[in-house]
Amino acid sequence: MQNYPLTAHPAHPPLEVKSVEARIIGMDENWLRLRWRIEQSGKVVFPPFAGKGRADDLWKTTCFEAFFRPGSGSAYVELNLSPSERWAAFDFASYRQGMEERPFPREPVCTIRAGQNMAIFDAVIPLAGLPDGECDLGLSAVIEEEGGRLSYWALSHPDKKPDFHDLACFTARIGAGSKA
Image 1: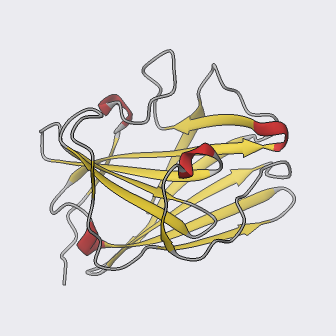
Image 2 (image 1 turned 120 degrees about the vertical axis):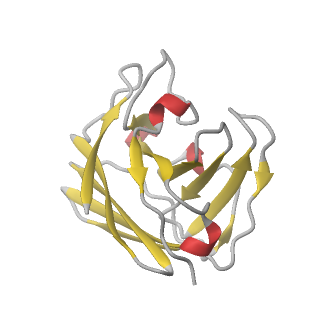
């Protein structure tokens, strides 16, 4: 288990959120378990329950994202995971190019637990939907607070504007899981 502190993009600071941390909490032959923890979450806007299923534009409100780049090429996978339980998965051939919906064998399981001072978002992702082998990993979050204030959190912000797709954001590494 490793913790990954995320930083807010300086051009889009949060209203009250103090910190966001991502963590790999487990991986076995079938599942990858990720957790995001938000400190000072009292003004965070969480999208309402919508039930499982794919959805577009999840990043327009509070959403958690993971990017996987296998090998040394430019192709990567993007996952968007919402507290509403909606999700999306895309393959990209290269930086923001060749986007296609990624097939998934079953839906990720998304769970939010929110209190006045802290919120925890857990995502359980089927490994069979992810690239094989070791991957560079980008973990990020879009956090909406009251009044429509959006902050963008990532492992790294290499540009003047938030861009989670920038390969320089993929600063973590995840080992190969054996898929059943």
